[in-house]
Length: 127
Figure 1: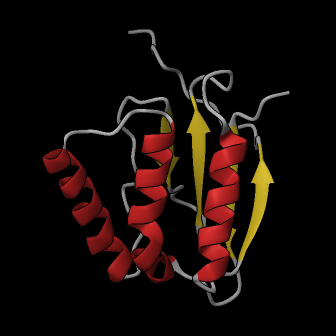
Figure 2: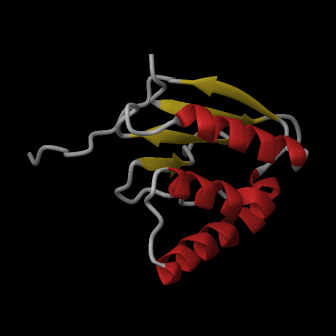
Figure 3: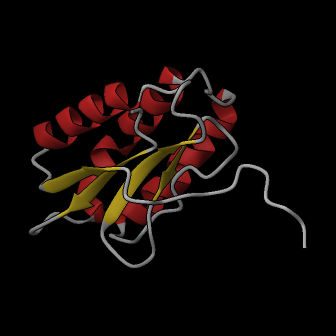
């Protein structure tokens, strides 16, 4: 069965600020892997805004735009996850291997899980 989400829970003394040096790599690799790279100017803005928060050890916005994947930082825990709108089109296994490698090389402590019952609606119905 294909994965819908991959989760990286920061543990120990690892914190958001530890993600600052690797965030751009994770974001760009994820978007390139699904052929969803935004224009250069927009990408620079997304990276800059997220890095400002990460460097201050605050929860960043992540990447929540319409794309084949989203990078989400939940409000209630030191975690980020990458979720696919369509697991048939997105190889989250490839993304998870890359992110795990990047985090490990940076010395960031984390736990990893898949498909933690996170859902979002690509076309929410208007009420």
